[in-house]
Image 1: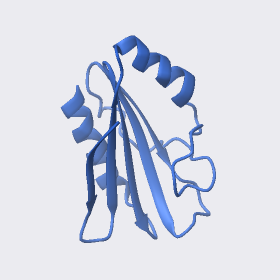
Image 2 (image 1 turned 180 degrees about the vertical axis):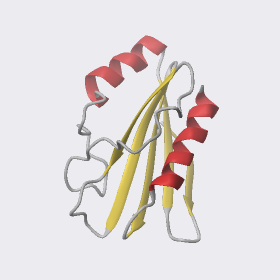
Image 3 (image 1 turned 90 degrees about the vertical axis):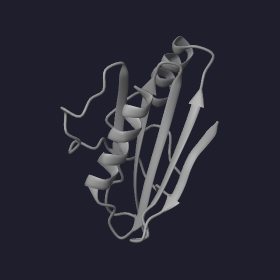
Image 4 (image 1 turned 60 degrees about the horizontal axis):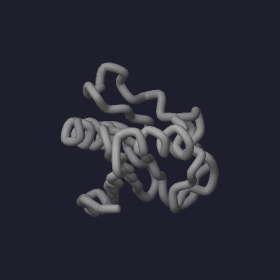
Length: 123
């Protein structure tokens, strides 16, 4: 696993991006289907999320990149001290996990922009 970034923005938003490269696209797809699932609720918990996170339905449907798949989740209220949003992107033999968190409320737009940009880099 490779952590490509771990940054804290001036507004105290923390963003982490992890990349996992598999031996082939088939292994990445199998892992995605068997363990990440793309379900309405995230099945693998992310640190800091106390309950299952529902899919983020506010992500614009036109923000797609050919040859990639993405699933976004937004932690449901009531939350702990941090609001956590996370996404999985599958592109060929690579799966990216993007985690963005902030005390209070993590805004959707910066998270969506991060997902779009990472999607474009992998696509």
